[in-house]
Length: 142
Length: 79
Image 1: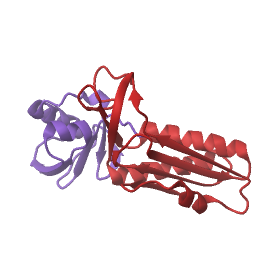
Image 2: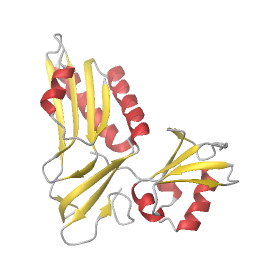
Image 3: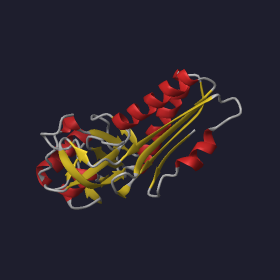
Image 4: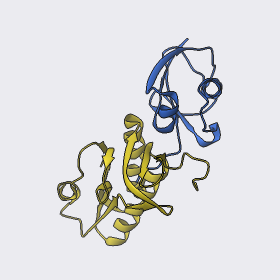
């Protein structure tokens, strides 16, 4: 199990190989991408930052929880920081399991918990208004 | 006592620094944040934040001691 914060491009193909096992009949991956809009505003690009020691610690806790809750073989998550362009991968989650149900459910659990708990922040640059830290302004829905 | 504070995201922007060591008598993170919020006009209310002491989550009434590192964690937005 591995939870990693990186400033390098995320390459799913090499990550995938690390979590496949001979007993794995199922592999589910999720890729979170930078999209070109948020809350109706056109987005030009964004920047992620993280409190890395705590992010990796909390991320490992999430992966352990997933392993306890679901019958999976292996799980990993990599989140990128730094400046990202539209279409680039911001986060990757991979899960392998004997059967697909557990792989789907565990993957969903890991991405949902990562978004809610891991100290990572997103600053969006907009085409037509000043950049903002997402979720940190009063008018942003929480 | 001396406390090291690391700032991230909006707090880093509003403080204009990512790390500093201060001399403080604040007994816990709740008092410390209230002092800093007043000093630097932080916009985030403590209810929106979490706090970490020495690289792990802590309670707001955690007793601070000399040499601790404190991080106030703005609302996260990974993914």
